[in-house]
Amino acid sequence: MIVAETFEGARAASAGLVGLVPTMGFLHEGHLSLIEAARRESETVTMSLYVNPLQFDDASDLDRYPVDVERDLALAEEAGVDVVFAPSPDEMFAEAPATAVDVPAFTETMEGAHRPGHFRGVATVVTKLFAGLQPDRAYFGRKDAQQLAVVRRLVADLSFPIDVLGLPIVREHDGLALSSRNVFVTGAGRVAALALSEALRAAVDSVESGERDANALVEVARKTLADAPGLDVDYVELAAQDDTSHPAVLDRPAFLAVAGSVGSVRLIDNVHFDLTEGEVSADLGIRLSGPSILYETGPPD
Ligand code: AMP
Image 1 (tube, rainbow, N blue to C red):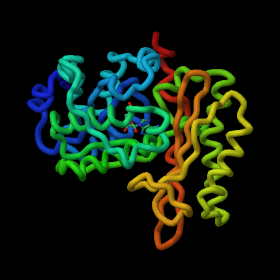
Image 2 (image 1 turned 120 degrees about the vertical axis):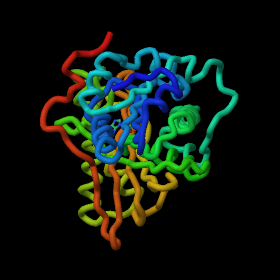
Image 3 (image 1 turned 60 degrees about the horizontal axis):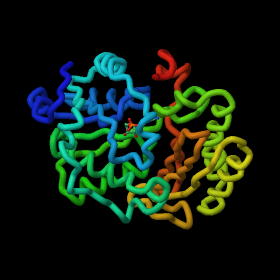
Image 4 (image 1 turned 135 degrees about the vertical axis):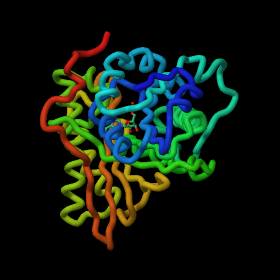
């Protein structure tokens, strides 16, 4: 495995079909599932490791973001990554960028509404990674469903010759969607956090008993969340997978997204609904059978 600090170095270390897995590090099984998919389908698997300051609307959130580069490199190597692109701050932005990539029609609700500037930061850096690393495929998690829609659209609008793949959410054994931030969720906070996935489960049950009305599904999820002391809910919204618009009924591929905070830790989750010949199928993702690797080394400093 080669660790490259420059775009040029990463490109020079790549050959054949390149699969890119963009990450902010502190890897868990969600990231590893993206690497595994890339490994199956690419000659060179490149993982970027960059905590993108442009996408943090809250400076204290950036300060506290968990970092353990040695751990990430060991996990990446074990998972079969060929090239880790770990740029220095200067390689990414020697000076503040004068260019920004925005996908406003997709980012006015949900995460976009609650984290001003977040998606501009994501879209600008993803565009830069695509331009600098020139992958053939790029792998993203459906955990960040709005982000996935934004990336798909910017790739189409800017004609990047890149296939964007979206992979299922990986969950901890109790249902909590894996996030690097979970290391900070302990004790009573953990119980509160579980309400997010339980709310989605309740909505899935409702869909399975025939409910299709968006407001009714949002209400079902909200009811579960209301019973969780210690969880500060930001939103519950049903959005179309392709353009994040809000359908009145579940008549197209969509996702029900929830977000909230447990103390100062912000968590998001969603369930994907797909339609085949009018039949709705729900995809909550995959559950680990035991504890996540996140907890093997204890929380970072
Ligand atoms: P991050 O390091 O949090 O920026 O995430 C890097 C990539 O991993 C993004 O495409 C995320 O959507 C994806 N990812 C994060 N958590 C999960 C998860 N629990 N399941 C699947 N993919 C995930």
